[in-house]
Amino acid sequence: DFLDRTQRDMGDLIKQMDEVRIEVTDMRQIVQHVPHPAFQRGGMGRHCDRGRHH
Image (cartoon, rainbow, N blue to C red; front, side):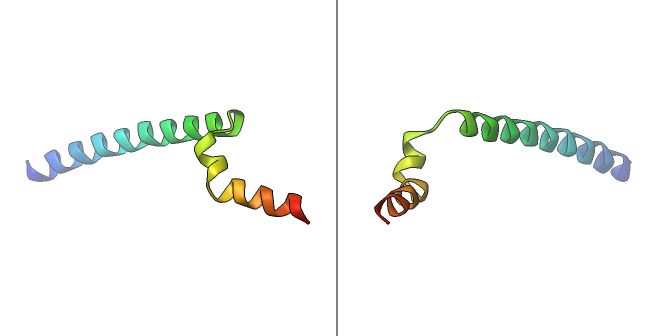
C-alpha cells in the first residue's frame, strides 16, 4: 500500500516537473523574441556596451 502510494506520488511529481519544464521552455522562447529591459540592464547589456567601445 505504501509503495503504491509512493509510486502514485512520483507519477504526480513527474507530471508536475514536465509541466514546469514546458513553462520554462516557453519562457526561454519569449525571452529570445522579446528583449527584456532587466536583461539589458544586467550582464548582457554590459557585455554589449564593452563590445561597442572597442
